[in-house]
Amino acid sequence: MHKFRELVVWQKAMDLATSVYLSTENLPITEKFGLLSQIRRCAVSICSNIAEGAGRNTKGEFIQFLGMANGSAYELETQLELLNRLKYIDDSIKNKLCDEVEAVQKML
Image 1 (spheres, one colour):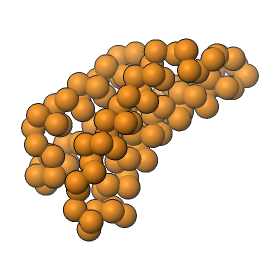
Image 2: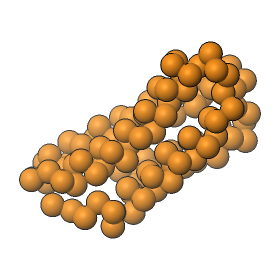
Image 3: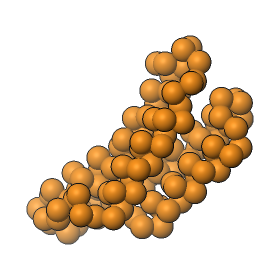
Image 4: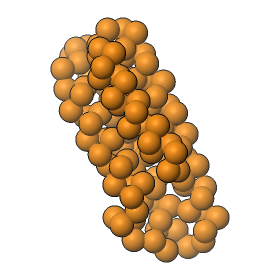
């Protein structure tokens, strides 16, 4: 249906996922299978759902996958807040990442 690599929202979501991975490199090893895994999967889910939806056969299916991507964006925002409250990331990193999330949410 769409060439997902040409979608600006997919490009921004890929940038966001990359930023999340880089910003969470120094989380405690105790979070490896907990919050670290969850937040990274969530960030990847956003761009993955956009791509999967683009490959569907109908506009309605595409819209459904964009909705799932948007839900993952809100989930990611919540997880970033939790990382900040647990003092795993500081306010400046959280704010930068949340700004990226908000930009993707607006596009979705």
